Amino acid sequence: MLEIAALSLRVSGVALGISALTGIPVGAFLGLSRFRGRPFLVTLVYTGMGFPPVVIGLFVYLLLSRNGPLAAIESAIIPALFTPGAMVLAQSIIAFPLVAGFTMAAVMGVDAQLHLQARALGATRWQTAVTVLAEARVGVLAAVIAGFGGIISEVGAVMLVGGNIDGRTRVLTTAIVLETRKGNFDLAIALGVILLGLTFVANWALLRLQGKEE
Amino acid sequence: MMETLYQLTNVAHAYGERQVLQIDTLDIRQGEILALVGPSGAGKSTLLRLLNFLETPTHGRIQFQNQASQPMPLHLRRRVTTVFQRPFLLNRSVSANVRYGLRLRGRRDHTHAVEKALEQVGLHEMARQPARTLSGGEAQRVALARALVIQPDVLLLDEPTANLDPQNVALIEKIITQLNQEQGTTLVLVTHNIFQARRLAQRAALLMNGRLIETAAANDFFHHPTQPQTAAFIRGDMVY
Image 1 (cartoon, each protein chain N blue to C red):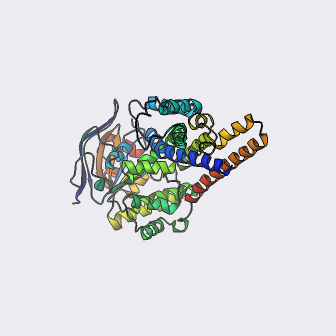
Image 2 (cartoon, rainbow over the protein chains, first blue to last red; image 1 turned 90 degrees about the horizontal axis):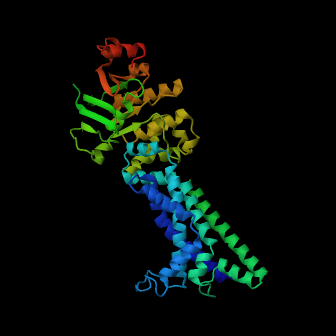
Image 3 (cartoon, each protein chain N blue to C red; image 1 turned 120 degrees about the vertical axis):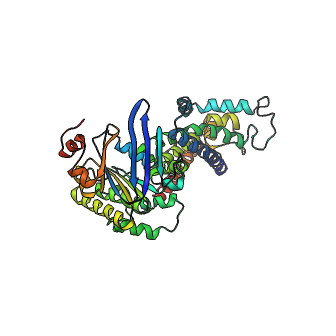
């Protein structure tokens, strides 16, 4: 059981890291700049925020399957199907629009006059962006938390691309599905409580991080 | 004769179709206090944004310290800063706000400078407070300290004391006058408070509909204006 919880945390943690590293800069860029095609990209991000995880799972499944376009490429960064790597890939894709979308909204919520003030004090464009992102930090943290919530509790994609293999790709959510189907309700509930506890502790840790910075 | 710091030649600025500024010529001299007065929408704030190189004029040329390249190089742009009508403090501590401009410049030796700037505006006891807990007057003084600490050659003030109580107005006026006298900082003050302009400025200019109507030494401007619009504006008559 500990092993399952650890894998859940590892997969979702790494996926969250990847989506934060990509989603925060993309969200900040979309929130700060104006260019042709931006409305289209914004719509794409918002659509992604509501995309069913299981469909993304299917998409990743097809990409990585034996006849899929990625399977032919021999590379260390492309994971094989039914491995934790494949699950990380799917969850990164699920969390990315959540992180990017909420970051964008947070950045756009910062008073435009503050950009002007930052530049008046001598900030370069890059420094202005960093300043605005720092001002929006509560919203950015909410974006990361939303991303985490979206993937730690997600079952469809990890089931498809991971396969729920005992000792290899079984995570809390897929284990709950399995145990419920087998009628082991006690175990399913125990797993559910662990999942709830983990989510609580992770969010609490993220909020503490925010508190320290203040 | 003081040295010319800014030289504006045929400067025009437009937002889309709307022409907001059309200045044939304007010189700003090193170490002076120039007041820009005029009704709302006259282009005063736009002119300040151009002088801070936050925007590039649609036409014409702005020479600053004998440089006229567009965009202005960063090190020259950083010799100028603006205090706006609203303080726009960062959601951090008071001292972190004051430190901000120095950190942008990559300077780490800021403790003493920050303390000194806060002392200048009479807020050294509030250094550790979160900026959002300040009153309006205190916040504007922090904004002023944040500008002072980078020791600009030019300080642009865009209605810095509008909406403040008389005590804070007096305090801020005293600080900027001192700054001008002791450091030789050039000040350009936008105000529609004619009395403030008269108290502080050595030269004054009237801007209406984006055009300079009259630029003159303060004494002439306020007591012997050559243009009827200036006279009307000073009297407090509506001029449009």
